[in-house]
Image (cartoon, rainbow over the protein chains, first blue to last red):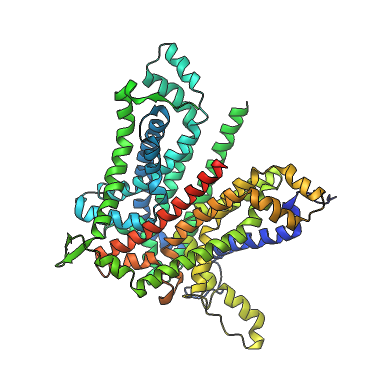
Length: 277
Length: 289
């Protein structure tokens, strides 16, 4: 039997339910259509012409597309590692030390988060064209260096924010206890502070990885003809020709994102239950 | 509050921790931005050379009616999209924050998941819905074909751009709104309802004022990225729905007029800074109260 909704049980009142359903459809209908069409045996129309996996096999036969995906994953891996290291160092510096201009520096580290992507994109285009040209003709994966540098520049501030928030809950007396017991400051940092940070490091890494894999605008300005990433490749496919291959590869990437999100949620749930225990 | 140790007591440690991230920020963010800024005062000389001549000609061109119009259009798009996000996102955030705990988690994931999926894929997905032979027109044609239904032209219009901007940025609005609404003191709402105010009145008289800081940060968090949007106008819009980011891109990739592109990019930067300054002013005022 269903009870009547409580006084503040807004989620169960029909006007809000209607809005929720409408917004849910708005957010998910385009993605569902995309997934369904990736199995549609028709090159052009949006009418259903029967089930096929042809577009998926076409994706794997497209060596340029596979190479672009491989580039993107490689860039994301390097960018994630560097971003986590730099972001954590920035957060620790701002948390551990008292110095003049700390507020200014804190603001400066959040700048890459708020600056419009297009501005950062053209800035890095000019930088790699005129100030510090990245050598051409380097063997893979070194030719991806400029893109990795760009991705780290906009990702590590996000990691710093996440780690900083976690540091706020750190009990400094634990570190003092370690120091009293004879640990050097580096030992105390590695053995006491870093373990406390672990969930934030995972969250930051996941964030950095997704940001890198997602980025189109900044990469569009830093990528060369032989360093095409997945979003840049898909962009040119979408822009210049309509092919259901894009539906298939998008569906695969969606699946990847869903899996990654659920791993993140599991990790979060586990650290929360550890904290309660 | 604990303020940390004085850096002079541990100079080596301080420098070891701060130098790598600060160096990266300076070299790969501050320096490139400074170069763009310098270029915005530059002149093209020959095909590849740019001289920083200290001219304001690029800015003068950027405020010519054509480009000022595009800037105004971008601001209008951003304002409209932000407003739609607020109107649509507020009830969603309200429902989520008052949902039972287990449902709440799922609803939050539901809002977050599109946020985590690739921006390009999400924008592309809209094309299949909006184009002339897309899902919406097919459905309408199926329903009203007997009445001589003509496909609605939605792709390459301002409407499509607006839909795309809202679609992509809705989570930017819902999440800060949810964070603000979730912290509300429920007893105030119950008191209002007990004293005879209706739900609508309670929302306008109690919830909105209390959630005002969250609404303000949601507005800014949505407005800034919408203003600099590139993909939605590029893929969904027509010739007359280009936004400032598309014009900037054209200067660098096609017209090859970098100084002018740099001036346009910094027009966008100045607007962003004004937005951030306004918000921190508002926050400071609230804190004083």
